[in-house]
Amino acid sequence: MKKIAVLTSGGDAPGMNAAVRAVVRKAMYHDVEVYGVYNGYEGLMEGNIKKMELGSVGDIIQRGGTILYSARSEEFKTDDGQYKAIEQMKEFGIEGLIVIGGDGSFRGAAKLTEKGFPCIGVPGTIDNDIPGTDYTIGFDTALNTIVNAVDKIRDTATSHERTYVIEVMGRDAGDLALWAGLANGAESVIIPEQTESFESVVAKLKRGQERGKKHSIIILAEGVGSGVEYGKKIEEETKMDTRVTVLGHIQRGGSPSGYDRVLASRLGAKGVDLLLENIGGKMVGVENNMVVYSDILEILNTKHNVNMNMYKLANQLSI
Ligand code: ADP
Image (cartoon, rainbow, N blue to C red; front, side, top):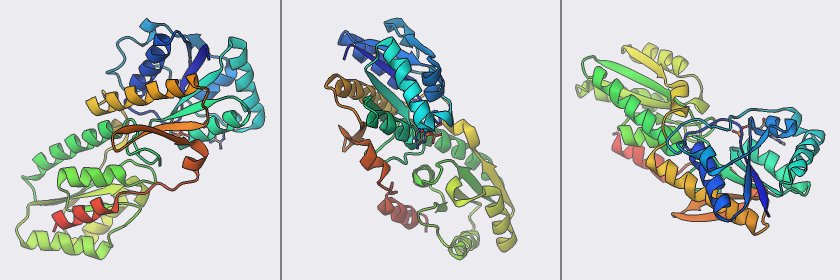
């Protein structure tokens, strides 16, 4: 391949820019031309495609968001939309595409590959909900954002006797909540994969109060439901003053952590290597600190599992 393209799609995640940079620089290192597609699949169908230079990705490794922007497109889900996208790339002489995004974006990449246009997926989402990789780009940064926020809540909490419910992101996955629960020493972690019974959460809060605990922290994954509703129920049941914080989109922003920058650099570069070997339809990932790749279709048919040993540990440490 002599010309490839890169796009970011779906929900953005810190570290996507570092991945774009790695794709551009690694391709150029191998004398391959790289094109940046703006606004995800929407931009791909419209031909919003620009040639990237070494300088196009200068000074972005530390920036959150994505310089290529992201978008969602219904039209691209149709065969017509996908053929339109392939036509646009052919006009530029582009022969392969790297898609940085989540599972929805990978469905699109699989469809293009099926239609004869090789694509490689690079997992970029804060949710860590993609099989075939131990970590997704953005997870570590989002985790650290949560950890810092909960630390601050804890500081103010020490002066009051209160229960705090903190709702964190993660879509249907409990990874962010679980890791944050362990990292913040939360009393309870409520995740969609294994919801601790309400009675047990309440019993734990009461035990803590009897022991003279000043405050308790409950971390709830958004996939379980509303933190505000959960907080109301807790207050009704325990009669303890309860406050709810929904961390929201601050979790998606910010400068990527060192780990995410390194991960993005490794995965972006591997994506280029695969395309240059004429391999498409794969997603790159990291397992046991080794860069690996697997079939996108297989990944899309596999369920993401949260680490239940860690869940057990979180409960053991919060007795
Ligand atoms: P994420 O990649 O973060 O999971 P989405 O689920 O919103 O985000 O997917 C991003 C885009 O990928 C969608 O707007 C759509 O254009 C494309 N996409 C999603 N599902 C499919 C599908 N089944 N076939 C083709 N394209 C899809």
